[in-house]
Image (tube, rainbow, N blue to C red; front, side, top):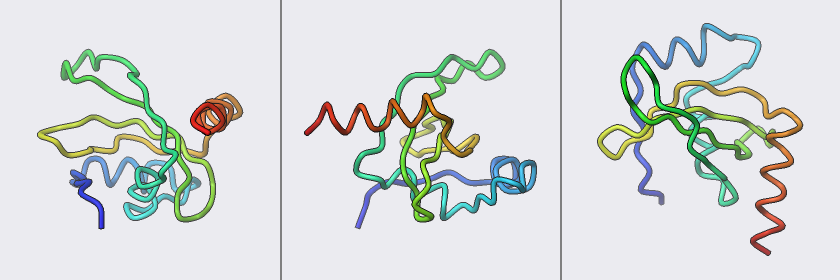
Length: 102
C-alpha cells in the first residue's frame, strides 16, 4: 500500500481526460505513473499565474507505456496537471536514470 495522495477536481480531471481525448488518460492511469518505482521527476518552472512550483516526471503506467506528467504539490498531495506519452528525450531521461541507479 502506498502513502501517495492525489488532488483531483473538475479542473484537472477535465484537462487530463477531456481536453486531450486522444491520450486516453484516466485518473487511475495517471496515478499509476507516480507509483512506478523508477519514476523520475525534476523541477519544471514556477507558474507565473499561481506562483506554484511545477514539476515534471516520467514513469510507466498501468498500460505499460512511458508517460510524461506535469504536476504541482499542494499540502502534501500531488495535483496532476497534464499527462502525455513520453517523447524520445523523456524516455532517454527515464532509462538513463534506471541505468545510473543499477
